[in-house]
Image 1 (cartoon, rainbow, N blue to C red):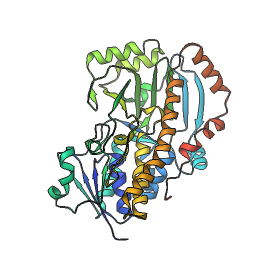
Image 2 (cartoon, one colour):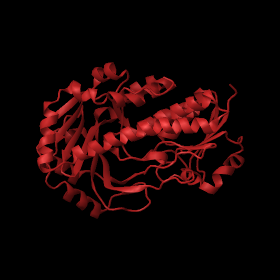
Image 3 (cartoon, rainbow, N blue to C red):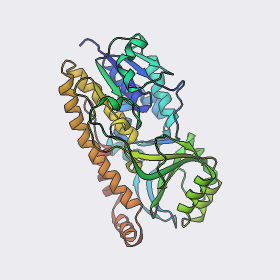
Image 4 (cartoon, one colour):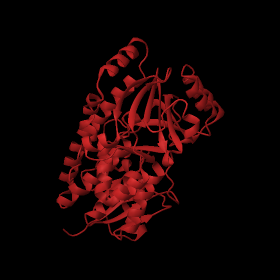
Length: 391
């Protein structure tokens, strides 16, 4: 097969993973990014086996193992009492059950691994500091001096410009939730959590996820609660009002966790948007992946993983029959939409369970406490054990 020309809009984790996947299939790839330099915002990232399996297949296994932290367990605990409700084993258990490791790492570290691999591949060209608006995408190849693309991939996130080229595409919808992201020293958090685990502390209309980063020296924390719609924005530095709102939302939590929230360094405040169902492609040569197509709330911790899956599968689908792009895009969207809908359903279930209150919370704790860890793991087989098409 003669290599084709691929244009990717957006050099985040999804865009870089897609670029590497297409390059491995022999295609020439141009990646366009509006930022003058790549610096992934946010802090931590959970790499579930369905994603790590693909990263390993793309040749990043050694680098991933050097950087990723393998937690001992995924724990659900009470945000008020710190009582452990249940857990799923990780480590060797996860690798054996799902065929690839479950780990956590800094988002910037994963982006760096992907960027290094893309930069080292002569078939990939990264164009930074490029203003990208939807009317300009059709002529981007002329501006960049590259061939007219056979396929344009929008990996440009929830406020995608590429999406404007898809007739009937949906617009982002505010979920009503916001996430405060920050890091603390592991020693500071040791009194209230085990720094070797991924722990989700649950509370009424709130939850907080914590896990180790930077060789276990720091703890990444993400606190999620209700919030107001800030309009079209990615992330913001908190204000004094934001911190007060956060402390009010977690006022009834365990004093140790509240103390961490009160004393934590400056946080990044993220409004959580989601994409209603809508078309992902134009039936010609433009397609959306990741948040641009189907942004979802992080209750299943699968945003990055779904984008990694899609870049890999799209590269395989396109390479099998690049001549019939329209049919390929229809089949790709149908297959991926079914998986995304199931991931959305899991996220909605987790949101209901994590934020339960009153009798529902008591029933949740009882049911979870009675389930064996192996049974909880089995509930995740469809998600973590998934083998992307082509693996």
